[in-house]
Image (cartoon, rainbow, N blue to C red; front, side, top):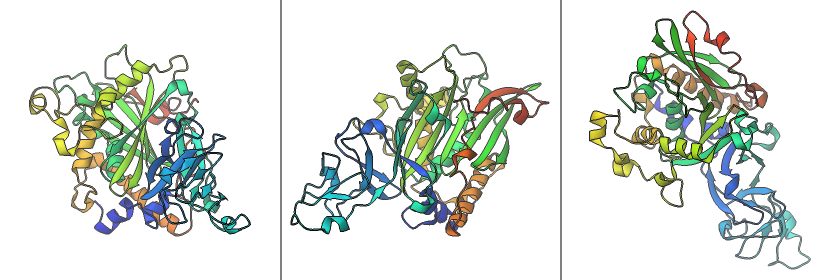
Length: 423
């Protein structure tokens, strides 16, 4: 468990907070590139780490992320005109480029130098993997651009989506790093003993700390001489990737994929969950049907969202449409969709979970190490150092996997080739 003070230290992310300062040392996913479909398209609102921002794509296809409010009279820039390489405030016509510089101030005399003394807060932007990334920390500590394997995967082999989650980011992250819960919460057929995660519901966890966070294996005994090993990576500050479980029997619809999430705090009590999937067989690109069906199984199909939003129709206010008869006879929860099942538990803990009331067990080892690393990172940043994982060299060669491994072999050696990135 954490003390109330420790819990506050790692959950609060606003400007000036210890954990907020840690997040601001990384490149962070802020928006999908498709949200800014073309040059001079309408600007969009985004909220990151408690800060309200506006993103726009200028005439030359450059993306800018600036303060949501004009520095003149604090008018909302969302209503601005996106034109001729700048976003123009419609209140008095002040115009700013993607760097935040004021390039036109028509409400002042033509010979005025006032515009050279005014700018709008703007953050560095990097576009990769269909995602707009921003850096919000000190400019002199700006790290190299992110280089996760899924960013290097061809667009034909990569799929990314976003979902709004109404709770603190750490609840979401810890849910993603908890392998034991999948035997219970995500048990979709309580009578099916062929599923690997149902054969051993008390996995052994082995955690190896790394330069980017940690790698860990959830090890389940599934046969006399065989273990099922699922290897996860926790990449600081809030990313998880894992091997994809298809079940014990061969599944003709199964496609070799790596899946994961980046839990991006919108503010202290709201999270933008990035859902990541990529195929690592060069000969087997994704099809639209495969991606849609994968999202539907997670409860993220087009029909699961409130139209025009990334909020799910199933939520805390309607008990996630739980079906108690289905819970009694077929699935562990009676809630449809693995993603929705996660949200029911994570959001149901409250906006910010009180971890001082917990009682952790042996299968919580990865959770314990995560909290240790996050607290250490807040200390490191406060003392002027760099947190783990800001250098892509520490994680760019890593890949998650899941395989059956003979019990007498070390999974680290047996799966060494499988855990190396290929893109």
